[in-house]
Image (cartoon, rainbow, N blue to C red):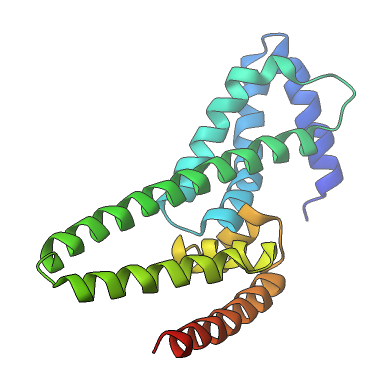
Length: 193
């Protein structure tokens, strides 16, 4: 049965030997930490290719910055911080990629529906303005939940990692935000009809 405290002590010992040039200790360290790193990446990124790519990225980062590990400091938090930061970077990139794809799709939709009349164009513009105002009026946590879960289409786990909110908090915030947006948009629609 694995003992996490003993594992962390062994990892620190191997890291110190690796810093002194011991290749066998370094190889043992990388093999031993891989399952721990994989567990963290899967928590943030799911079980797909992204998580496996992140494991390899983290091992490369550890290789590049192994000299920064200080003897006597806990090894496991050092490694967890590196892994978590890498996952968050990947989530940000995924979010930016998805936003770019959504913007590209929006441009295609505009090209397809660009032949609508001036009244319909003005109506769409008003609706978009109302939506932006309603989202801007939401409390910060609700705005963030809508942005991550609905606009960026992150999973609850990904959004939780990116926002430092629990999955439960995100669910509640998103639910409340949707109710607030529905009420705000229904009210806007009534005043302009």
